[in-house]
Length: 584
Ligand SMILES: [Zn+2]
Image (cartoon, rainbow, N blue to C red; front, side, top):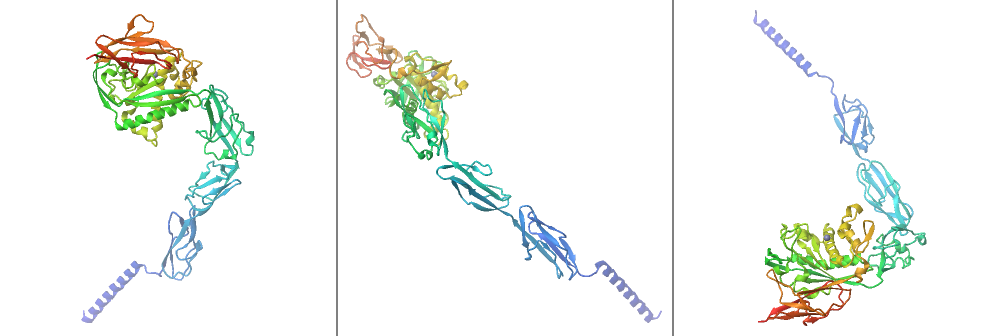
């Protein structure tokens, strides 16, 4: 082959290969006319969608297909990101790639509050609230003479806040002429107390009839709008003495005013044992005792509150009948084993007790009171000396209260913190115990009903022990078909007989010692104890304390210094001790 032809062949082959390559490349690229990408999107897919083709490829100068921005429920379309405001758009003569966003916002609704006759709306009366958002609270306030009844949509609360708004709302507050219902607080009336409430209409005030209750041994003095009985609503005959102010009172209770027919004062002494220092034989049976306790500052603070609380409670129960006066005595000397009784060491059946009459420094006081109740803390939280459920003990005239029963588990702080939710409950428990034991101190003086029997009915009659105790004290408790309890006669001293006792016994180191005897008038023999019954307010027989040889009479426990005494005007269980001492 000649050289020229060979070069030609090679050139042809190269050209052919290049041509083939060029065609191949051209086919792979798919080269065609240029198109632009046109995209439509919602700015937030939860607020709306695009109807139509969201992704379009358009030849230069051609038009895109129409699309529409559609809002989801609760939203409205507000425009496209390029400024176009119509929801439907058709972009013409496309000249480049483009992406536009449809924009939405929450729909807003008008929430409107109006007031009908007799009142107004406090708060924003017309509110623009976005879809599913909350409105501002408003209150329907009645003008004087009117009262709020309800809203036109049935809502009965004057205060309202509409939340999660999904549609427009318009409601009207409805008011009506004022009408007020007062509950009667009869304070243990014994008659005329059938009506529980009285309804008064502002336009017909004279139509209201007020009940006129009765209470035995007490005089009705009218209805009052306050517990202190300063705002009179009616007179004693039930005639209204107040005008439309009756509708402005912050209370809905009317309180009966009562005045005692006969003024009766009843005095109680509360003794608080400040310190116990008792070691050795207890009482008269040789059991030993090992007790040492001083009331803490907190406990003393509590004890200082008790007399007033109890006095208030009793005067509330006996309002308009009897006036209770409560005195308090805090022991100055430690209580020692000789002053402590209780016998066998059985904390349930024979618990330890400390009776006021056994405490020498208290003895001079006891005959001035009709009941004496002693409180102490034995620090006996494991129930060695009294069962932990035992809250108190009562006997004729005297009672004991075990403070440790109430102070278990840090309750003490609750009892002086009036803002504590259990404050009232704790006090009621303690006052209930005081009243319970008080019942026991007096029940010997009259033909008493079974006080514990009355208490046992509490489930049956659905009353608390405290309520039943109050009824019992007032002589208004129900038991076995009868009205029972402390008779009024007891309070005024109309009792059968009063027990009077003169003693010479003295306990020393757990033993009774007698250093003298007693001579009663007109009696032949002397004795170590003189007991007699006298009428209420009566006079006891004359008694003389006579010392044994080698001893001399010092004085009586109540301070009387003459060996011979004649006691008059005795009104409750009376007892004194003659005190002797050896002559040096
Ligand atoms: Zn009892």
